[in-house]
Length: 326
Image (cartoon, helix red, strand yellow):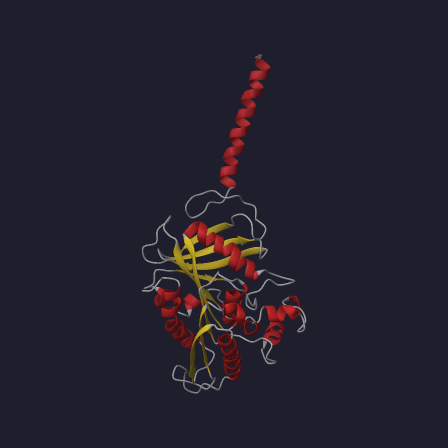
């Protein structure tokens, strides 16, 4: 080898080494230190890039670079006692928010989810769902269903040891999400619970259009026009045949102020409407052979004290369904 060729070989090796160092510095790392590629994957493929903020030993906040949303999405994860990297598979409980929440993780800040679930050997997942996302892949907009059930699920399985024994529960809009997800994805969830849920979007007074308009959205971008089949395809009351074999819990108040409301609380017509929807849903689910536990507790408004109470009452059944009893 002549002197010029040797010098060229040294320069090429040095360049390769510098490139390797730069690649290592620019590649994001998971909570366990495993490098992942910086590019977003299309929905349903590849690992997602994740930043982990450890709020406590049990409480992790994830920022997931999501192709389904076209931006970063937030997820709160509450870990069970005894969890450690590499452990599992662990049962999983999804907790879904209602509409119009300023905090994506309101189940922790207002719903006391950390306290209520602390005795159970389960990973609790509280994903961002959008203020009026309605737990769907929008025709024009974010794909919440794909984010939750593909991207978030895969991150949990890869980084936290989440298994395939899952339950899902939600309040208001999240009640729709819980029942819709369980029905639309057979075998994914063993149990589902709705607390004051939107369970019949086709009853003529569902409020979906009004809420979307309040937030500057067009309902046609969600499920199309009201005669579009997509409305029924996401409507829990029309999906009850798909819930046979899933253990269900449905709770709702009647809208009159109850013992957990402050003095002077006005009647809540919205909660009364949701009770009617819940009764329709339960009747159809039972007619289709589903197992349903109901808690129509009478007086009570559309508010956090009742949703905390409902979660506490539903947890024994939900946890038993996924083998995570206290």
